[in-house]
Amino acid sequence: MAEALSQPTLVVRHKGLLTAAIMLAMLMQVLDTTIANVALPHMRASLSASQDEINWVLTSYIVAAAIATPLTGWLSDRMGRKLLMLSAIGGFTVASLLCGMATSLPQMVLYRVIQGVCGAVLAPLAQAIMLDINPREKIGQAMALFGAGIMVGPIIGPTLGGWLTETFNWRSVFLVNLPVGGLAFAALVLFMPKEGTEKRRFDMFGFALLAIAVACAQLILDRGQGEGWFESAEIWLYLGLGVSAMWMFVVHCATAQDPFIDLAMFKDRNFTSGLVFIFIIGITTFSGLALLPPLLQNLMGYPVIDTGIVMAPRGVGTMLSMIIVGRLVSKVDPRVLVLSGIAISAWSLWLMTGFDLTMGTWPIEYSGFLQGIGLGLVFVPLSTLAFATIRPHHRVDATAMFSLVRNVGQGVGISLVTAVLAHMIQVNTSELASRVTMDAPQIRDIPGMLSGVPTVIAQISGLVQQQAAMIAYLDDFWLMVLVTLASAPIVLMLRRPKLVAKPDPAHAMAE
Image (cartoon, rainbow, N blue to C red; front, side):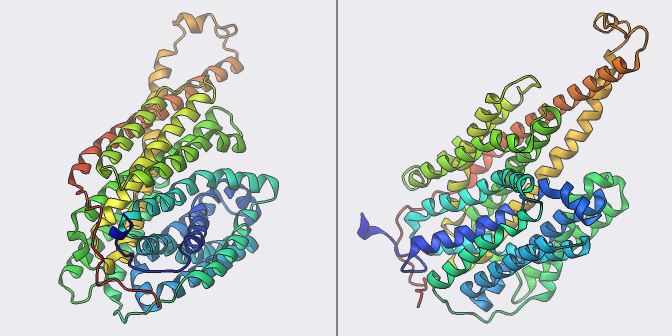
């Protein structure tokens, strides 16, 4: 009943318009994590960069965003969320303009760093504001809307980036942010209430340790494959620095009077379990996004635009699922929804293990749609459970940590499937090649084979490599099935919160 509804932490007059504004800002940032990927070959030629050098366009953004994300809580207290949000949107939009005007690789890397720093706070702030402006009973619907932006953005990013690049040029993937950023900025000026600030001491030592640990983790994930992983002294250096910094950070936060991160929020079992879960979801969700485009384009010959169209049902499934789950999460045990999502996600990945090079588009579209349904069933109730019992004054720090762990999970997932793919291609090529001998009837009967015609031999070699790569992709899909199923026991650690709660007297009202 309406009278039983709890009060939101932050009361605003135009909640719908404010929600639209912060979602627009967040979607702009989320899109930029993938929209530039397809434009890299065009950037490389325009900026006169090598293959290794152009990858820093992506690496610089990812590392900068990872380092800046934990700063969200402190900056929010010192500046106020409205000023911080406006500063981040303005900085991100200006940096996008500069990226679109860059004439050299150093300029591009510098502007991408600025983009990463400014964009890092947008998703945590958006999630924290949506948690605060909705009563506890409506948090499920709010997280459904937030999740739609987080999950659908990376899916449509490559498609939009490919269309912009082919229709206009690579600079348009950055310049498209200008009208979006301008609209979001104007809407927030009008609809976001001004909040008070809090004098919070900045723990420089704690931040430096966390920044080193996060940067090393991202550099390992980003450069590991190219450097041969632990065969490289560079990777060992990152690992040693990262582990040492993280150990010192935990000890420092446990003993310091005003640490950079208040470890008390990790005492909330739902939040801590949610972090572990979202890490695994990051692995399984975005590894599929990393595998499908090269599979479709390199092995099956799909153009960039067609690849995006074939993958579109995944986004449709996600949005549809989140709309439905947002209404169910307050009526059905969220843990049941999460388990259902895990089962459907695992089923979709199992269907992907049956892919072959001669199939049509239906298996890709159907499995993608199911995976989108599963993601919605997992993400919305998981976000609701993770933040259901967290203290209000921990929300911004908690959402920043949630975003950071999700992003690290994405990096781990992409690196994992990439490493497994490369290894299994070698193993499968060796295994298949050992069976392709002159004694085999299928080989002996090929016209021109016995006389050693070079074109015939090259054709057979190409087929062997193609089949080896396809089997390697299927091996990766099997791995994701197992990882997804292995996450199911974590659901047992989550507690179902009370659906109706009394207003918290500590909740602040917007002035």
